[in-house]
Length: 124
Image 1 (cartoon, rainbow, N blue to C red):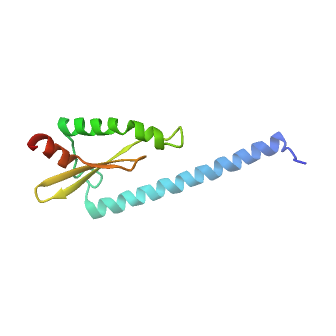
Image 2 (cartoon, rainbow, N blue to C red):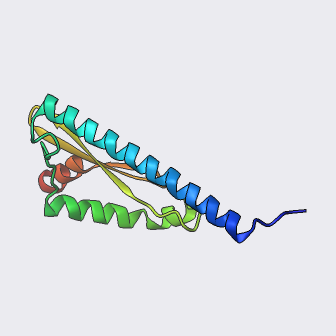
Protein backbone atom coordinates (compact mmCIF):
# COMPACT_ATOMS: atom_id res chain seq x y z
CA UNK A 1 0.00 0.00 0.00
CA UNK A 2 1.40 3.34 -1.06
CA UNK A 3 1.24 6.22 1.41
CA UNK A 4 0.57 9.60 -0.09
CA UNK A 5 2.60 12.43 1.40
CA UNK A 6 0.70 15.36 2.82
CA UNK A 7 0.76 18.76 1.17
CA UNK A 8 3.08 19.98 3.94
CA UNK A 9 5.45 17.07 3.32
CA UNK A 10 5.40 17.75 -0.40
CA UNK A 11 6.17 21.43 0.17
CA UNK A 12 9.09 20.47 2.41
CA UNK A 13 10.43 18.00 -0.17
CA UNK A 14 10.14 20.65 -2.88
CA UNK A 15 11.98 23.17 -0.71
CA UNK A 16 14.79 20.65 -0.04
CA UNK A 17 14.98 19.83 -3.74
CA UNK A 18 15.23 23.54 -4.62
CA UNK A 19 18.04 23.99 -2.09
CA UNK A 20 19.97 21.05 -3.54
CA UNK A 21 19.53 22.41 -7.08
CA UNK A 22 20.63 25.89 -6.02
CA UNK A 23 23.70 24.51 -4.24
CA UNK A 24 24.64 22.38 -7.29
CA UNK A 25 24.17 25.36 -9.58
CA UNK A 26 26.44 27.50 -7.39
CA UNK A 27 29.08 24.73 -7.36
CA UNK A 28 28.92 24.35 -11.15
CA UNK A 29 29.15 28.11 -11.60
CA UNK A 30 32.20 28.29 -9.31
CA UNK A 31 33.90 25.46 -11.24
CA UNK A 32 33.15 27.19 -14.54
CA UNK A 33 34.69 30.44 -13.26
CA UNK A 34 37.78 28.59 -11.99
CA UNK A 35 38.23 26.78 -15.30
CA UNK A 36 37.86 30.05 -17.21
CA UNK A 37 40.54 31.65 -14.99
CA UNK A 38 42.90 28.72 -15.60
CA UNK A 39 42.37 28.82 -19.36
CA UNK A 40 42.83 32.60 -19.37
CA UNK A 41 46.11 32.29 -17.46
CA UNK A 42 47.45 29.49 -19.69
CA UNK A 43 46.24 30.63 -23.12
CA UNK A 44 45.49 34.37 -22.92
CA UNK A 45 42.28 36.28 -23.40
CA UNK A 46 41.51 34.74 -26.81
CA UNK A 47 41.42 31.18 -25.43
CA UNK A 48 37.76 30.73 -26.40
CA UNK A 49 38.01 32.26 -29.88
CA UNK A 50 38.02 30.04 -32.96
CA UNK A 51 41.55 29.30 -34.09
CA UNK A 52 40.73 27.75 -37.43
CA UNK A 53 37.47 27.62 -39.36
CA UNK A 54 36.85 25.05 -42.05
CA UNK A 55 34.56 25.82 -44.96
CA UNK A 56 33.14 23.93 -47.89
CA UNK A 57 32.60 25.47 -51.30
CA UNK A 58 29.52 25.27 -53.52
CA UNK A 59 30.90 22.36 -55.59
CA UNK A 60 31.71 20.32 -52.46
CA UNK A 61 28.25 21.00 -51.06
CA UNK A 62 26.63 19.87 -54.32
CA UNK A 63 28.62 16.62 -54.27
CA UNK A 64 27.69 15.97 -50.64
CA UNK A 65 23.99 16.68 -51.28
CA UNK A 66 23.92 14.41 -54.35
CA UNK A 67 25.67 11.62 -52.42
CA UNK A 68 23.37 12.04 -49.43
CA UNK A 69 20.29 11.92 -51.65
CA UNK A 70 21.58 8.70 -53.29
CA UNK A 71 21.63 7.04 -49.84
CA UNK A 72 18.00 7.85 -48.93
CA UNK A 73 16.50 4.44 -49.90
CA UNK A 74 19.28 2.58 -48.10
CA UNK A 75 18.86 4.75 -44.99
CA UNK A 76 15.12 4.04 -44.91
CA UNK A 77 15.74 0.29 -45.31
CA UNK A 78 18.33 0.18 -42.52
CA UNK A 79 16.71 2.59 -40.07
CA UNK A 80 15.16 0.60 -37.24
CA UNK A 81 13.97 3.47 -35.09
CA UNK A 82 11.42 5.82 -36.62
CA UNK A 83 12.97 8.70 -34.68
CA UNK A 84 16.51 8.03 -35.92
CA UNK A 85 17.48 10.51 -38.57
CA UNK A 86 20.65 10.45 -40.61
CA UNK A 87 23.36 12.95 -39.90
CA UNK A 88 26.58 13.71 -41.71
CA UNK A 89 29.94 14.11 -40.01
CA UNK A 90 32.41 16.35 -41.78
CA UNK A 91 36.09 15.51 -41.37
CA UNK A 92 38.88 17.80 -42.50
CA UNK A 93 42.32 16.14 -42.67
CA UNK A 94 45.35 18.39 -43.04
CA UNK A 95 47.86 17.56 -45.77
CA UNK A 96 50.91 19.41 -47.03
CA UNK A 97 48.81 20.97 -49.78
CA UNK A 98 45.64 21.82 -47.88
CA UNK A 99 42.78 19.74 -46.51
CA UNK A 100 41.03 16.56 -47.56
CA UNK A 101 37.29 16.64 -46.88
CA UNK A 102 35.60 13.36 -45.98
CA UNK A 103 31.98 12.96 -44.93
CA UNK A 104 30.33 10.02 -43.15
CA UNK A 105 26.61 9.26 -42.99
CA UNK A 106 25.48 8.05 -39.55
CA UNK A 107 22.99 5.28 -40.35
CA UNK A 108 24.68 3.50 -43.26
CA UNK A 109 28.12 4.50 -41.95
CA UNK A 110 29.22 5.05 -45.55
CA UNK A 111 31.98 7.54 -46.21
CA UNK A 112 32.71 9.78 -49.16
CA UNK A 113 36.03 11.41 -49.87
CA UNK A 114 34.70 14.69 -51.26
CA UNK A 115 38.15 15.84 -52.35
CA UNK A 116 38.55 12.74 -54.56
CA UNK A 117 35.05 13.14 -56.02
CA UNK A 118 35.71 16.79 -56.78
CA UNK A 119 39.02 15.92 -58.43
CA UNK A 120 37.34 13.31 -60.67
CA UNK A 121 34.52 15.74 -61.44
CA UNK A 122 36.89 18.42 -62.70
CA UNK A 123 39.77 16.39 -64.06
CA UNK A 124 38.13 13.15 -65.12
